[in-house]
Length: 556
Image (cartoon, rainbow, N blue to C red; front, side, top):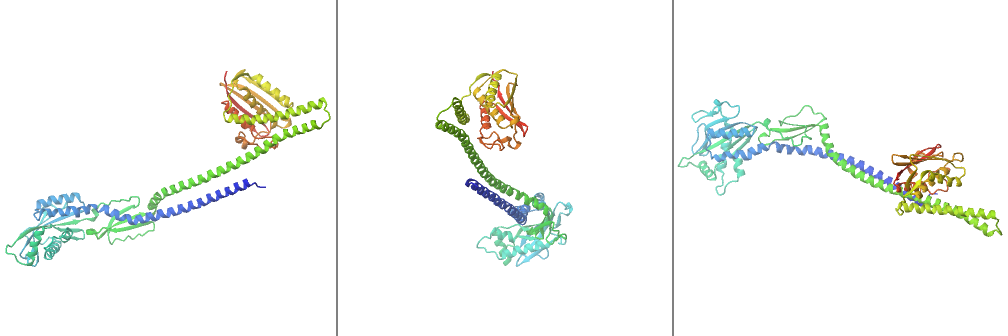
């Protein structure tokens, strides 16, 4: 028949197992989802992080275009070859992607140029001098054109386009308000493939004059200086800044038309156009899947570690609940066995006392022999009850440190012989032997030591077969320690039970222990030894015997 306590324990245990299985399933699913999330996140990063690589890589170009290029306007058209050369030197040194610069020293007139200029209305822009600068330009090739030369080896397309663009802008100028910087920059700049042409931006007042010069012929025949610089750019000299080296294995600049013949599935690729003067080129990204997988795992593993930690906490909580349930179950069983055995221990002598009392009461007369018999029975059973109560009381007092350890000098031989005499009187078939060496007397608590001897002697007698009720006691002084050994020839203790025999209410299940044991004897011995600042250990072989070893401090 299963008790209600057992049924509740099994039900709770099943709930814990179900809980662990459930969180394990959730943990596995979470790991799967976390890995997919990590994979998707890195794949999205592969696409989105390209813009950041592009932004960081073209930062020098943006700085050149937005900050360095407008510096030309500060010269107000009065750059000469020497000043232009110094300016270009800083450009070539600071921005490696600028391979060559052509300097156009131009004039804006109110008359038409016949050969070396661009005409629009009554205004024209003509060439005065043209110079080229670059690390590969020989010194004798710096000047390309002079006032008296015929234009033959000068790239006129960029100059003509930007000159026309400037004059059209002046013709449409709203003289009531100054144009925006964006509008000015746009109309005085021409961006072509791998090239930027830039005219210095004149003042608003000068632009008004240009407007009039386009519309009609002025009486003063004005002439104004304009400087144009044409920057030839080499996209291959752009320094690529890989902001995600663990994501992009290789990044290079390729023509926009580049299409690799090898499209192996082992690689992941991407591209993004450079834009501006580099719009014919793109950044080409390529990584092997195994390389990207490392980044996926580096993203996934911290998430997995957090999930594992959370899972571990839940499992620990389940384990602690299970352990508490198990301990409660064991405590319930131990308490149940304790109450049952204690009841039996009390019931037996009480029943014998009651029977003896009824016999005395119902007898008409008692002989001297009967009186002695009944008196002996009553005395022995009363001693049993008294001994059991004293053991429970002593156990409680020792656990609560409610007794004081006495310090009396004893003679070890006399003490052992006294113990032997008592137990031989109770058990005539008990075979005792003993030996001592190294000391004669020592200081200890004789009552507590006697309780130790009595408990171990009783165990030796109780757990031995009829023909092997033997106990050998040895007492030796070893390195300022009193070592006591109690060796019997009993049934022994299984190795699986050795770690449990000193626990309260624990009983080894065997044919000698079905009734009459509360499970306090060895636990009581353990508490006594600890209280006396000693140590107790046991060695046992089934069907060969058991040896208890007690080590106590030697005081003399």
